[in-house]
Each structure stands twice: as C-alpha cells, then as structure tokens.
Image 1 (cartoon, rainbow, N blue to C red):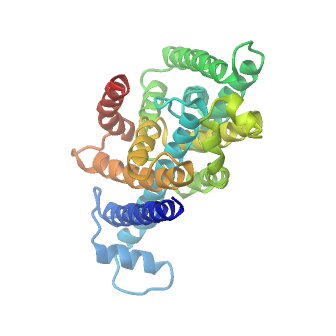
Image 2: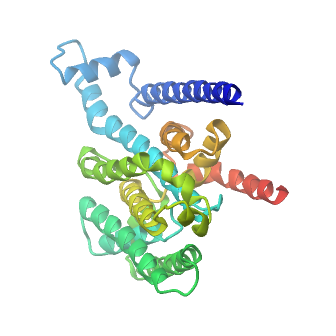
Length: 344
C-alpha cells in the first residue's frame, strides 16, 4: 500500500508540474502578444527595443513605441494579470470556507460596497486616485459590516455571513441606484456607468503602484495558509475536533480575500465571473487540494484575464468593456455548472 501511494503521489506531482508549466508558458505568450494589440500595434522587435530603452538601449526605436509600452500597455497588462490572479484566489477561498461551489468573491458585498464608494466619489467630483480610494474603503467597510452583524446572529456563522452579505449587497446596490438617479446624465452618470462596466482603459503606473500592495498581502496570506483551507471545507465541528481555530482562520481568510477583491474592483471596476469560473477549471486540472489549487488559480486566472482583455481591445473597432466580455464568457459556464450540480 505504501509503495502504491508513493507512486500515485509522484504521478500527481508530475502532472501538477506539467500543468503549472503549461499555464506559465500560456501566460508568458499572452503577455507578449498583448503588447502588440491595440490601436497602435507594436511588433515583437519594437516591444523588445522599447523595453530595453529604459535601460540605456540607443537603437532606432520610435518615441511613440516607448511611450505606449511603458505608459499604456505595461500597466494595463500588469493590472489584468494581478486582477486575474487575485479574484480566482479569493473565489476559491470563499468556496472552501462556505463549502459552496457557486460562491463568488462578492458574496459578502465587497463589489457592491466598492461600487457605492466609487459612485459617491465620482458624484463629488473626485479624481481617479480618490475614486479608487473610496472604492477600496467602500468594499472593505461592506465586508466588515457583514462580518460584525453575523457575529450577533443566533444562526451558524457561515449561514449568517451569507445572509448578511446578501443584505449588504442589496443595500449598496440601492445606494448606487440612488446616486445614479440624482447624477447629471450628461457627465457624472456616464462616468459612473462606465466605471461599473469594468475596464482597464484608465489604469496607469500610479494606480497600479498602490493597488498591488493589498493584492500582494492578500495573495501572500492565502498562499502561506492555503493548506488550512482543506480544514475549512469540513464542518465546523469536525475542524474544531482536529484542533483548528476555525473562527480565527475564517477571519484571516475573509480579510485576505477582501483585500484581493476590493483592490481588484477599485483598479479595474466590476469584472465578474472570473472568481467563480477559474477555481472550477483549476479543480478539473489539479484537483481539490488547496495546496495545489491556490497557485493554479492565480496562474490560470492571470492568463485568462490577459486574454480576455486582448479580446476586449481587438474584437471590434471600438473597445468593449472588460466586464462585458467576462460576463459573456462566464454566464454560459455558470449555467453549465448549475446543471452539473443538479445532476450530482
């Protein structure tokens, strides 16, 4: 039995290594291709020369190519990769904590709270950085409120969190509707609507410079404690019988997932379905063990959102909002997932 187990484990590790390598190569190829897509296409040679120009390269490179590479394409691609890595990791963590495969990162109202914060900031005429700050604060406040209310509930905390999160989500959505109702339809309303669609058009190094820190913290915490998520998939009584501090782990994972979701929303707006779809795809590739699932979600999610952003920029003569593209792809997947769960 021991020899068979060792052989099976070796096969699983080899398959996992090959899968992760394929995901990494896909992400690398997607990033290279992304630099050449847009209204001002760049050849692979121009991409290489524009990159090297920052380090003293004096070749025959066009100034426009350097500007587009460093100020437009690079921050946009990095933002897509970071958001693509963050949302599936947060989604996988929530699906494990709530033991529900249909849970997404906005289950506790983080996206709705961020939307309300951003809408209020736009209504008050704030600049882009303040809009992002308000969005981050709104998302964090919504989750904190949901958690504090659930602690006073007589029901099990997992159920209370879901119910409270739904209430917070509905309340914030009502607030967004109210803000849109009183906004100037010729200016402010258009800005709010565009932000809610989800897009990476206005991302730059300044906005990316502060958004990556909460993402790095959230990813680092979940990555280091990912093996504990296997315990969180058990019932609370079973996990406690194994000596796991369930409430502490739940609070840590909620805080880390909130950092990931709030930072993603304030950087790129509402980009749905990524946090729901990618974890299921990764489970089919690497299995349900969170020690392998979390890194796979980060890698595949980054490659996926970079590809979706390429499609948004190139499928039509005008750029589509990224949130629209991910919704078109994700909605049929959600339907198939519901049918699959019913079949079980």
